[in-house]
Image (cartoon, rainbow, N blue to C red; front, side):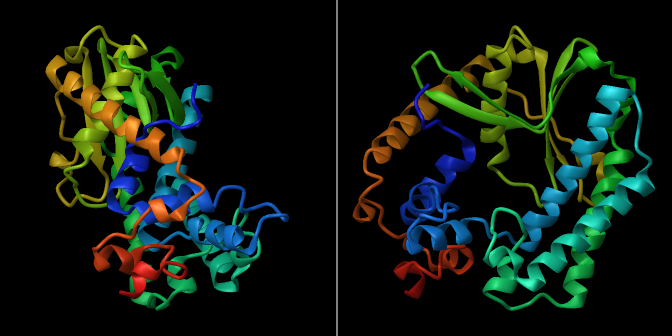
Length: 302
């Protein structure tokens, strides 16, 4: 398969800001190597920056993946208190790494928060807020509808967990997806995406690509055999935290068409990766405000 593949995150980056796309996917490439130029090393460092929302969300995903692995391979459920204690340990470890700035020299090995790199440093109240969000998300995961299905599932019921998967559409586009969880229950393939933030309109497009893969992989014969759900672990009302997003053949066809056009654009810009001039900055300074590459981008200067 070609080197470039369509993914929800990749095309979103390109649509948001072409210059950011250039920094992330091209200039930062191989920036971890000692022989890399200073520009590449700097871009790689900035690419590896995280922020409190993303970092804490990643920790929730990591713990859930660990818990599911135990259920899938050993049939053992890690107690909630131990899962939360593990999360707190990861929070403390990452915080120490970031405050010491270890990621400045070894960005691939240590966490470096954008709040520490750019400032301002988050308050104790803000840190406590995110800590409680992590603990609340894990609590809701353990007491949610998906856990009820996981408790009943056997090893053969698991379709995938946190794996990068690729497929090619009929039109020829190469598509990359990463499902948080896909599991079979009661004759239905459940496609689950954990969310630790607020609901977003983008989730439907993301899940539609997952549904395309599920049909391609033979997990279901038609969209009616799928149940695609974002799970909003931080939602106050957990009774509405797992809305099903239904799809039809027409939906999948429409998505395949849009992916094809976007894939062709990704292939086109791949051929331009050696010339930053083909990647203009965006006009939205609000995007620049939170962009990890704002240190090296003139667009962020207004």
